[in-house]
Length: 318
Ligand code: SF4
Image (tube, rainbow, N blue to C red; front, top):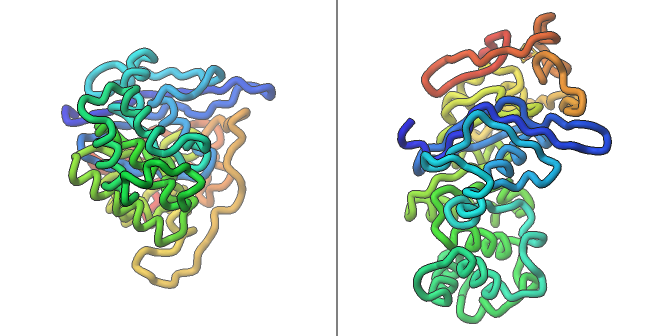
């Protein structure tokens, strides 16, 4: 475990809302190794983005975070420590580049400010030109004077990528980085992230509901549902040997990467109401294999290999 740069143990997050307490995360543990890509899959509301916002210290004043352990490069991630690391050592790319960039400031100015804030040593202007060129915004000297609306959606996502990697972070969290983009631009951004990873050795957490993206990019996968981890394993273990009925359902609901034309089967029903989470397994209302025990008791993780675990009362091979 020494090569882990991030470790989170037993993370719980509750949000106070006017309707009551929303239990967004319920005992989630994971780690990321140096240079590794960890994919986090699951439907909206599964808790995948919330888990990462808590790592960034961005759950807001209504989010109550509790974890047995949360460390980055061996040091405890206290709120004070996160403020120092955020944007410099741990960085995040958000889904919508238009709302993340300031429309009234040039992109060059915004990049310069990010570098100044994190005390970049060396020429800031040179770094801005270098990093914009790296993400394919050229000629960078000229384009750094332009405003966000003067770029296409794909270019804005490239600029956000530039901003998040400007300080050479050790860990990049990419939250649905390609969801709003067309397929061609999506492929370009993923290729860019791959190149940046291999040149810098940074680790990445890739949050997406797109299993195809995870299959192509990740080393390991966590599948989340209802604020809990349902299954985790290497890409091969998850895509070829899924055991959890939710993972099996997710894989059946999307086209296969090998192009085979199997009938797609959606998972019927809705995710659980986290204001009143189920007492037993969170997937119980939608699970075709549910048993009596699933209603009242949460399953403990079963270990299939050093890397492969799943939480279910029943082993289901797909
Ligand atoms: Fe289905 Fe029960 Fe397994 Fe949950 S614990 S996934 S309800 S079989």
